[in-house]
Image (tube, rainbow, N blue to C red; front, side, top):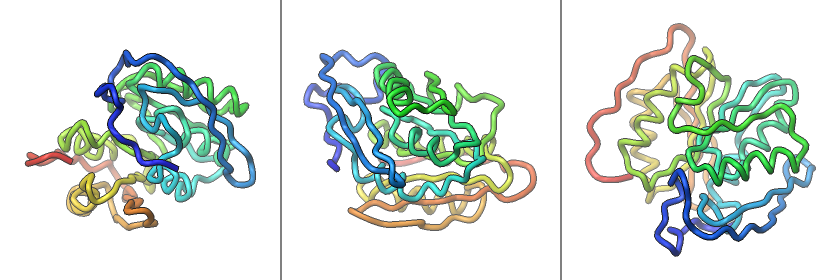
Length: 224
């Protein structure tokens, strides 16, 4: 597993159309006794391998067989493929603004013979307008700034089923403690830390029963 530095070209991994020259490589990792196979590439998040934050998130998905799951900002598809393997009677939707990453995610669904998942291109929750999920999992693009991340968190309740769970991974330098406090004050329901490792923590915010609460992100100073 590797940390994710800024691409050498300076090109952000959340660009819609990366301009870096493709240089695909293969990656494998074990999930619940099954060897999963992926192709990864330049110009996308975690282009050198599975980053420790995403790995920790995968370890703590807790997806049930019939769950409907949203992998928000799926990158090349590690979380979505793992979730689909767990939700064998459910459905996984993977969204991504980076079109190269979206193509890789679709290839990786095919490589792992996943038939209960799909990839949609778009930002925020636009590709799932009007839909709700049992689990929303995300390792958001912290480098794009705090207002962006707060919008992801604020709009999550409208896309969670009652009792549904928002899973967020991040580390201290990315402002994860700030986002934990924000979720505790403005989120869909109770918040807890599921796991810690390599400086990262996985947060779970569970939506309370009843109508989805509305949350507006406060003005944010500084960057995530």
